[in-house]
Image (cartoon, rainbow, N blue to C red; front, top):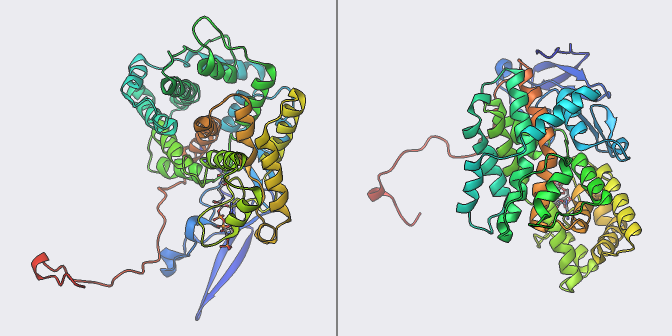
Length: 440
Ligand code: ACO
């Protein structure tokens, strides 16, 4: 399917010395203006400098809209707050992101059935858990095993076929959950639980994580709903670091398994999805008395100290992350209902209160992001800290898949290959080792 290319609606002018360059300007559906600099290298040998791609639109997309100044996030046009009510579920959101609109009943039940049919992992893959050191990081296991799905499902690798795509996508979404639960079981030396086809997506994950022989884990509605909400809120976030990674890898025409495995690796980093683990470490440190909320804020402001206030700040949001807002409310609800206090929630609230009044955070527009409150909810469900980022990855898979599909459906997309500002040596000579001055 070829994307329709919008005609430029305005022009911008760039003047460099005597040269005047006219650049097309596109206008997105929410009114944002984007200057097209694509042709200026070929015509003028000019390159733009945008370190870390902070202000470069690398694709056209119809999946997710963010307004970072106002704290707005929409999936296929639907504000994420509308998914925070009884009814919407993660699988429905996954379908919506991937296929562009809300599914009808038949489409949703077909997709569910497809996921159920694919919930087991190949016994060969399962046996590999025996060879992995028991305490291996679950993100390393997830990335390696998603990549290995290509060994077991080679027939779904060819690109450009919608039927093969959906087979690969269903395997990824369904098996990621099984692989994640097995990595936890392995770390605990517990037998693996096969998935239960009668359970819904999140409940099945919790069953695989926590049921023990002769004692089925009882999944409360409250816990299942909270997990569903967390997965929905993580499902896509336009061109973030891991999604951009998936697109970079996918742009080389790498298959969906390889591209999503790369996304998991990017997400693992503490500046990205790994931040939820760092938040929990920080809150636990404060709780144990190693730090106070005040000293934590002071350390985060100290430029000689690498410490950051994890769960705060965002490349795009210069306002409260709308996902953090929903999660904070969910924490209030879960802990309010259970009359079951988590001291870490009080510490998180205190940190937020101090930070939001502090000129350092105000001037830099640093607000809580999605990782600030998600860990507290996951902890309330009994999820261990080292599984937090894995749950983020399971949630983000539909987004990666949707973005990969959109990229492959767009026949105008080329391999992603940024340029650089070279500041190294000019032409230099190779000197044989015996002739080199070792002092220099
Ligand atoms: N604690 C202390 N200072 C911070 C923080 C923080 N959490 N975040 C940003 N700052 C400071 C920066 O040091 C910088 O200060 P300066 O202007 O004096 O140099 C200023 O705020 C602007 O920040 P940037 O570095 O421009 O922010 P950037 O867009 O590069 O990074 C990021 C965004 C990586 C999220 C950053 O805010 C951060 O590291 N936060 C902590 C980690 C985290 O929570 N990551 C999860 C993000 S959400 C997600 O990926 C799912």
